[in-house]
Length: 189
Ligand SMILES: Nc1nc2c(ncn2[C@@H]2O[C@H](COP(=O)(O)OP(=O)(O)O)[C@@H](O)[C@H]2O)c(=O)[nH]1
Ligand SMILES: Nc1ncnc2c1ncn2[C@@H]1O[C@H](COP(=O)(O)OP(=O)(O)O)[C@@H](O)[C@H]1O
Image (cartoon, rainbow, N blue to C red; front, side, top):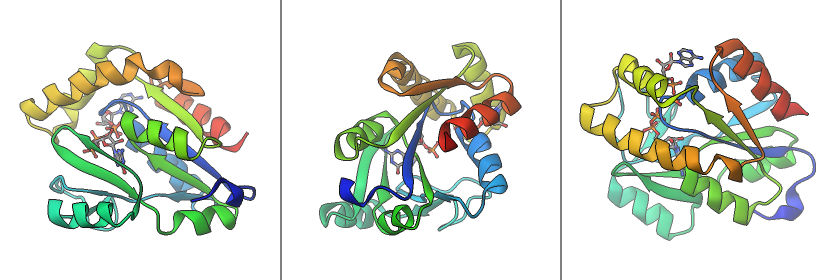
């Protein structure tokens, strides 16, 4: 993707610890603005959770398939997180920005740093939890991850929260409605 194509639309990067509520907030914004926002569907090597579908939440690819596509340059960014690979397919993004859409990437810290380098005009937003205790209780209540996975995610969370000052804006997801409104203003300002 080249910086020169920016103009009509914009690229927004949303980062924050696992369990902070990124998916919940973004889902609500997508329902409100189905025609203005393109949510980039990432690829991952992790297994689908109950209710997740290939091509909707993620493209669930094998490690071989992922590495092959990564090596042929098909990702805008990619990273390893808690034992699995995650990446943003380039396809669809350039065109959507040229068409004037807001393109949303929901990605972890290493990927957000890559986008800051390759696409400096992207707006980068960090979603923070009210506290580590609340983050852990959200992760446990969600009931999608094993204790081992939760431990890895809380470890990443500390590193990510320590890097929050690298982002343009931090939004604390305490009251859900307020967080949605704050992200909405940040996206369209
Ligand atoms: N770098 C990168 N990170 C991603 C991508 N897609 C998702 N992630 C991040 O990977 C982490 C784990 O995602 P996931 O397994 O779905 O867990 P969840 O965030 O707890 O629901 C989260 O921080 C996501 O934001 C991607 O395409 N690239
Ligand atoms: N503001 C909030 N207050 C209380 N619970 C929340 C809030 N936002 C999200 N949650 C809950 O926290 C859990 C994790 O949210 P999720 O959107 O899956 O996080 P992420 O996508 O960042 O991993 C979910 O069970 C969700 O319903």
